[in-house]
Image (cartoon, rainbow, N blue to C red):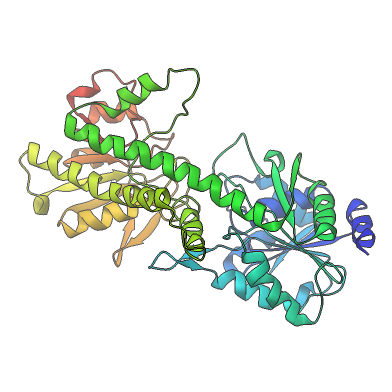
Amino acid sequence: MNHILKEKITKKNAHICVIGLGYVGLPLAIESAKTGFSVTGIDHNQNRVQQVNNGENYILDTKDKELEELISSGKLRAETNYSSVKDVDIIVVCVPTGLTQNLTPDLQHIENVAHNIVSILKKGQLICIESTIYPGTTEEIILPILETSGLVVEKDFYLCHSPERVDPGNQNFMTKNINKVVGGIGPQSLDVAECFYEQFIEHVVSVSNVKVAEMSKVHENTFRAINIALVNELALLCDKMDISVWEVLDAAFTKPFGIMAFYPGPGVGGHCIPIDPHYLEWKAREYNFITKFIGIAGEINRRMPEFVREKVLRGLNAIGIAPSKSKVLILGMAYKKDTPDCRESPVISIVELLLKDGIDISYHDPYVDQIEIASQVLQSVPLNKITIQGVDIVLIATDHSKIDYHWLVKTAEKIIDTRNITKNIPDRENNVILM
């Protein structure tokens, strides 16, 4: 039966529905529409839907002109409800998955989507799950919901998991040229899913089942979380031993084999590294298995904002200013350089801690105009001489490329650099404290 859908796919007659138009969904919708598919995006955010339909791009990794052209040609449109996509052939789910306060998986969004899909599920459709989930979610949670429709997977419809690998702000690897892992609920599902993704992704990597695909994603981010925790812990130790962790790492990374570069920072952020490892940690308990590395790595990474706070307090003490009478300017609110993405940003935790100390906080971020932290709405302030001279310490929390760090080092009285972005600036030792 899947030959019918495959023929529609190869002839670009298949109608695609992408649910969730964020960092994953919108670039995927654009890329698939560029190859000739008709694509409808679904998002509960009315403002986001309106922006898409007006050709207004809000994702840095997509091109304004491409979005405008696809909207004008009618190849791409956005809706807020499912009633307008009853006749789609392929549904791609790109909604966020998070954690509860107890670090357990929060699947409410993807479960709600699965229930909504039931109302439009028909024979011959392919459902692709791109949201990050723990191994077993597709089979144990999503499939039973879909089969309440009365349709049977592999016989009436197809189901696959193909984990997203988006790296916001990365201009070298984007949707089209990032290897695409695909696992099907069965051979029919895998066959049609391969056919679909091969139309607009350069290299598709097929695996034997959905659990392998699910596990591959959480492993990728667990690998990063653990290695970041390793260098963060090293930074904590080097601080006590009065050794420059940055110099240690630069020396270690000159080895041409057996090592990979990871650097410390103020914590981990984004929608993957702080979350995905805990999905695996939680699932492992079902098998009476304790993932020790994951738990320890999480503890270390969550400790870093407190360490940055300690650095700020030390800096204030060195210049003889009480926290309650001090002013600190934070450079960067996003979790990652050159993006507006504040999801799980460790800078938010740092600000919360410093506010509790009574410190007067302001921030500058060229990508984040406004943010609410601890019931306070903060506005990004201009980065100029007056702003710099009006604060006691400048804390570099995110190393955005748009900031002139040479000028900053010359202008600011005291700087705490958590990213070592001032590394090659002459005479920085006069007023720069490294994390």
